[in-house]
Image (cartoon, rainbow, N blue to C red; front, side, top):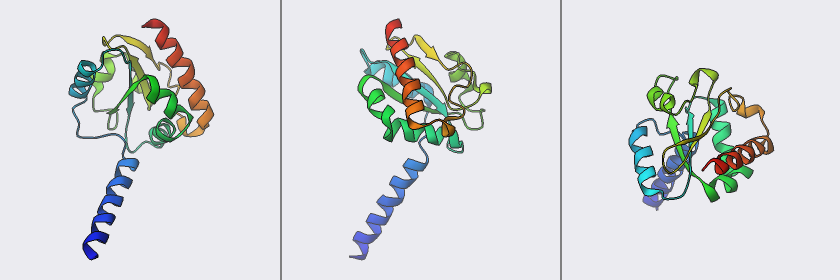
Length: 152
């Protein structure tokens, strides 16, 4: 019984940690994007640039995984979260997609399955995600994903 309880506690802590830390700080972002592009024939990709220390990034992640936006995004897009540390990590990845980290995080780029930029937040549109309602974030993604799909 003690072993079962210990395993349950370990599993619970791991799940909580993943939920609290949506940005994998050790993953090679370039390799993950390359691998996803190779495995994706017709599905555009939403690149979410953020960090685990950022309350707005965590609020956006929650809305994207549990809010109204979750269904919208999961249905038509692949999601890749790119850790930017304190805007000192993966700067080259952000720059390659025209993502201005200096405008604040989180920020997103939507790319085609052919790695062409379809949309980028240019003015820090999501940098205050924790002050946006779930519906506000949903309306943002509804608008930009519709715009990105017309560019494919």
